[in-house]
Image 1: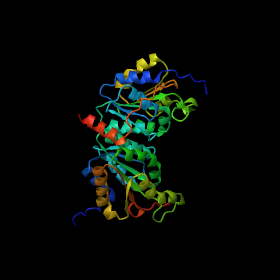
Image 2: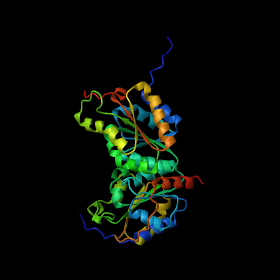
Image 3: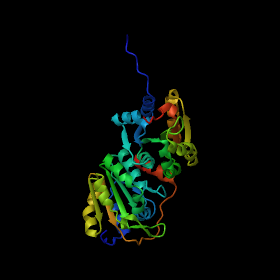
Image 4: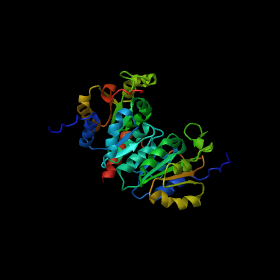
Length: 194
Length: 175
């Protein structure tokens, strides 16, 4: 295994840059730091935050994308969650949702459990998996210039689109989203009907 | 002689319920007993057939579908029901409706001993995570039972599993 580049991007700035351009996109946020990043950009009833169900975020995105084909669906999650969803790459690749983009904030660590290294530090590159499962576009993003070039693709390009953004392990302060699952579901559904 | 109407396969009764109850996303991991139902779902242009690599994907799919206003059914074999348990915790916490049709292995004249442990565990573990469990061992009751389970799930926002015995779906023969 070749020596990997060190992840350096600031996760809060990356998520803020994506969400600034979200328009009317629907957002599904993965448990832990990705949820806090999304919440730090301002709460929105069209954000669905998960506090458990690890490994499920990408598939929540697929179900939502199939149900709302005219809306962009952005899944923003972490590398630990996505490693539990390796099969979901294949399922999403099989369904080819044009409106779905998956963005992984990949800091190569399990941030909520003591910063143990994840498999993305040990030889796995998600973008390669995404390409091999027929995503229409996939990239590993290390630099701000790359991110800038990729933002329109995340927001608009026909999906499934995958971006693995290599972010530093330091994170911002805890900004916690609402936790009650039923409340999160109801407010999302009501906002979508408006 | 006038042509006789072929007997209704239980899968056709399930499809009638899916249509009546406006089930739109049908996720599945294949099972021999589910073959005809999966084929009918895949052939239905008004449904999204979603092949899964593992069963819990379908549970998470149902949450996204529900957020987007669509109804989901999940078709799995009993051995796959165990894979769904933690993900079903999200269904319970978020009060997401889900219809699960679980074709049982290991309940009737089973040949494969590896099917027995999960067969015995299916109903208790599903119940333990908050799923309403209905057992079905008579092919004539498929339509009414699945219809009732569906109404329970979507009228009251909870997961309902129908466990379909091998006496309904057939016993796999190794020959």
